[in-house]
Amino acid sequence: MEKYFSLHIRWISLAALFLLASACEKEFLERAPKGQLTFDTYFETPDHAVWATNAIYQNFRSWDMCAFPWIGITDVISDDADKGSTENDALYLLEIDDFTFDATNQAFSGAWSGHYRTIFRANLAIENIPGIDMDEELRGRLVGEAKFLRAYTYFRLVQWFGELPLITTPLNEDEYFTQERRPVAEAYNLIERDLLDAIDALPEKSEYADGDLGRATKGAARGILAKLYMLKKDYVNAEKYSLEVISSNEYSLLPRYADNFLPVGEHGSESIFEIGAVAIQAAVAGPGATPFNMIQGVRGIPNLGWGFNRPSDDLVAAYEPGDPRRQATIIYVGEVLPDGLTLVEDNPEILNERYNQKAWVPAHAGLQDNGPGNLRLLRYSDILLLAAEALNENGKPADALLYLNQVRQRARGSNNFILPDITTTGQGELREIIYHERRVELAMEQQRWFDLLRWGRAEQVMTAAGKNFMPNKHELLPIPQSEIDLSGGLLQQNKGY
View 1 (spheres, rainbow, N blue to C red):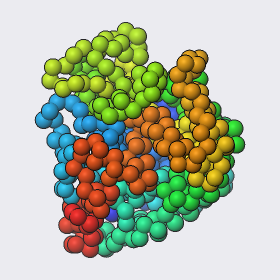
View 2: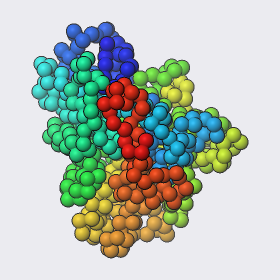
View 3: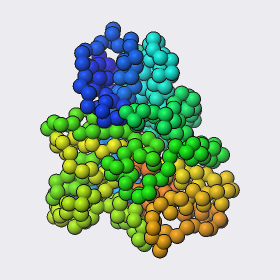
View 4: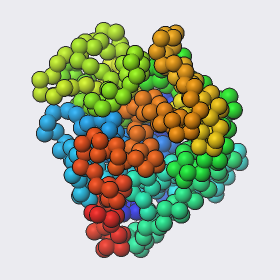
């Protein structure tokens, strides 16, 4: 049986775990598994190394990693979104929206278990792949991918929960419920080491074959490292690594903003890191699909999903007049969907309904949960705005304006009457402009809450939005009560819960 930290979920067979897993590419996702594997026969061949690495990516498509737990504690918790859907559906998301939750809320236990499951798979790969007799370069790259994915997973967790159990090897049976939380600085150090190792081991995006697009790259590792340094307020290193992404010439802004979230933009020039998905030709969801599109899809006519993660009134009001990004982000009643054919009709069961257009996907095989939309996790415009922010903090406003205005110029397209270039060089004023630009550029992309936390503005913004935010408590989420119970109290709860 497979076991992993604090999660009492049993293994499915190794064949189901690894052979059904994929990295990202759709051709690979459609290949059927063959044979059965056990611990005695696993981690012996190069294929085993690839499959074990693919299994880490696969978990990002799971419910716990991309459905209610994910949107609940990224978008819904922020001022970008409300719970959405019908009034009494998924009330535990309403608790998050209103800040009336406690440590028993299932979104927290789902996110915790899903992320530690991903870490478990990464630890297996990191420990066992080096012992396989195989091409040295490929072996090093796969370990680098696993380290990147482990670092990215811990990066999410530490922002939500603060101090964490830091697990870097598969645990022995007597270690499952004996783990203690470690200081945040230790988590930062682990993430930094893994990302630096990944930068050394990984190729650039252009060096991958088309069938491997979506695997971790130097650019992705540099980008998350820049985000880590921004979190630490190490603006010198944040500038360094964001500019390395920019100067690599591996990425560019797509001419049309909305294309980032349509099939035409998948793994495009603006994509630094995204998890691939594909709908299989079946009546039920397959291992290559995700529930991400379903939970946010139009609820009613057309019947595309469940209608959660409603863009908020506050977000609607945040856009400058004429900003095309609002239309590319929000689906309104009466609107024709991006397929150019389908009109959204009013659903009387939903109050003031609107939907996240960035989660929209065209008609596809199977049911709603057979979602084929890639999970866009890091875009080039995000890095341009991080570079602008870091440069401004480092006293280089002219350089900051260069990258800020690139984002605004792409957004306005050929319409020179909207979104004028920013010219101010005052650090405080420019800081506020960059903060606002990040919001409207990255709205409904699960970035806003993390930004508010690192800016120290969660209390200010949540209070203004009328939420029941309590300072010195809600900056961190509670450790799931089930995990504290399983540890016999060894895990200590966050303050205020």
